Amino acid sequence: MKRFKSIIAPAFLAGLALFWATLPAKASLVLTIEVLDASNTVLGTATATMDTNTQTISSSSGPGFFLVDPTSAAGANQLDYAGIFGGVAFSLAVAAGSNSPGSATMADLSIGYNTITNSSGADRKIVIFASDSGFTAPLSPPLLSFATSTSGTVTGSAKDGSFNANASGIAANAINFGPVTGVNQSIGVNGIPSVVSIVSSPYTIDATYGVTLTNLTSLKTGGGLVTLSAVPEPATLAMAFSGLPIIGLLAWRMRRKARA
Image 1 (cartoon, rainbow, N blue to C red):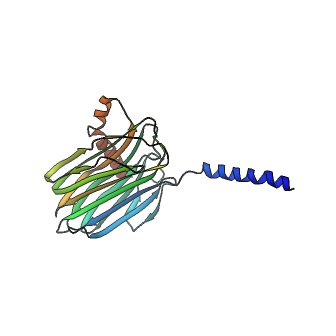
Image 2 (cartoon, one colour):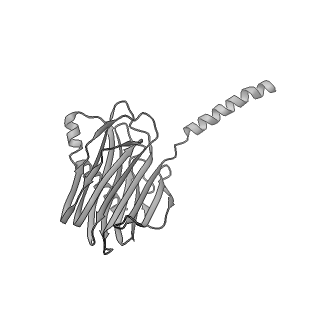
Image 3 (cartoon, one colour):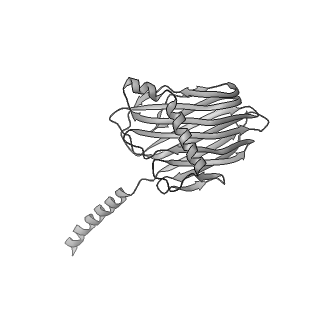
């Protein structure tokens, strides 16, 4: 009997370890929105977490968060928010989207918005944070191109704009923009891509989009995009950072929202 137990115990533990290894890693898509005044005092925050394995909202700070398509397959994760706080209206949704767990050729994380309007009577700083912890691909080798870009239009005046991203703790080259003033003035900035090596998974990609809007200023149809991809040939690389990828991806995600 003692010998039988000595055989069964290791086998049981090995089987248990194999069972846990086959379970999907916990993966979460996070969207956080803050509104601050000119002295950087936080006037309001909205935050939620989506479990990308179950395609459900696992936690939120309050109403206003929703999923475009709770039954969508991995590769089309999107968490949206619509509401008003701090004198700023987030209309038709602000979205965090990703293609986690990624593919052999591409990982992406995006922050998108349809319309953001400051009607508070004073300057307001808007900070939008997105993060996805469920990326398992692509991995190095080969080396990966780490790129960021922004787009959108401004009616009024936007200043102190920035877009920052990290992948597996590695910072991308920051984007800064503004002031941008006028009617339907374009925001379109491509960050300088860097080459990175990511060898372990799962890993996290996060991004922060910040901008200050003067009173009665609106932002429309834009946001920021982060991509990790295998380092391409120089000609392909130039096209990748021409500004077209972010416009296409964000427009696609906003159309998904409109159809829902």
